Amino acid sequence: MATKKRRCLNDSNSFCVIYGEYTFAKYRKSITDFVKSAYFKYFGVHISNLQKPWVPNTVCQNCVVSSRQWSNGKRSALKFKTPMIWWEPRNHHDDCYFCMVNITGINSANRDKWSYPTLSSAQKPLTHSDQSLAPVPSTSSTSFEPENIENEEEKQDSDSDFTPSQETKPQPFNQSELNDLIRDLNLSKESSEILASRLKEKNLLTPDTKITFYRTREKDLLPYFSSEENLVYCNNVEGLIQKMGLQKYIPSEWRLLLIAAKEV
Ligand SMILES: [Zn+2]
Ligand SMILES: [Zn+2]
Image (cartoon, rainbow, N blue to C red):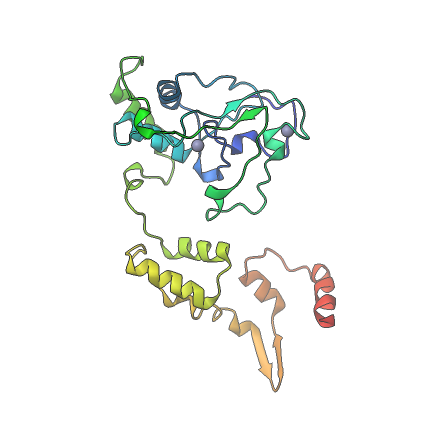
């Protein structure tokens, strides 16, 4: 990996070298010979300057999967006609992709619609005007056999929780994935239940995922509260804080909040 001489606001390796999209840590893959070969066959140029700090040394899982499907003839085109073209930025304040992309608030629900800056140092990919004109994979220009490609990919994926064959089929949400999505979308109890039941109707939930989970999602927290006449209060602040996943309750850090809450 290239040593970083410049310091950017974001790590260049959290972006995909092919299309420049921000990639969550668990979907970052290293650029294998297979990826380089597929890239060359599709775009007609090599991935270059990987040793430079201004070129990501990461490829996203989507791009690995699409490249493999294209190579196997299972899809006719990749998402874009050209890859991201990386150039050395002139400066960090208005020409550096890794400093200019603001990833605050990005999550799995909004990631696909996230906007990225147009910069002279990072030429964005062009979309296909006609996917049927996309290049056709050929094994003749490669130095290794298709079997080697498969082996290479199996090695690549063996340490991740990712199963390639599931990628083309719908992948139902399990309870914790659905909970994550609902939290990301900040949904109310009612909306959560509607979403869950619609997903269930379409068979997009794993069998053990409960729709009614959200109706009582506060029940675990109720023991931390007491009610006396008109007063409802928290009877175990430390326990509540820990239950909500915060590591440690430091009363002095919460004093300000209490004062503010009293004034409301
Ligand atoms: Zn920078
Ligand atoms: Zn990608």
